[in-house]
Length: 90
Image (cartoon, rainbow, N blue to C red; front, side, top):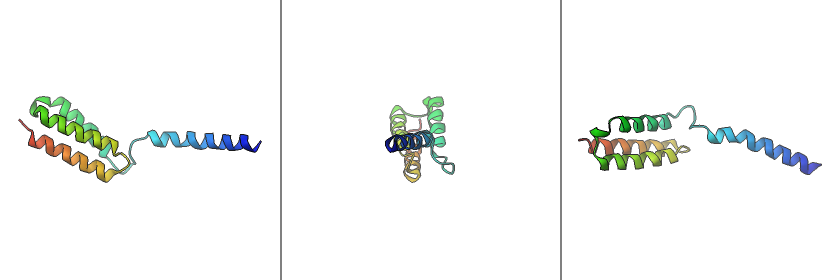
C-alpha cells in the first residue's frame, strides 16, 4: 500500500512540474521573445543582410534559445546575433 501511495505522489509531482519545464523563460526575462522577434526580422528583411551574416546570426539565436535557463547567456547570444547582422548589412 505504501508503494502505491509513493507512486501516486511521484506521478502527481512529475505532472505538476511538466508545465513549468515547457514554459518560456520567467516573467521578468524577455530574451526568448526578443529572439523570436529578431528571427522574424531576419526572415522579413532577408535581402538586407548577407547570407553569411544571416547564418552566423541564426547560429547565435539557436544558442540563445538553448540558454533559456540562463538569461545572461541568452542576452549575450542575442547581442552577438545583432552584431553579426550589423556587420553583414548590404
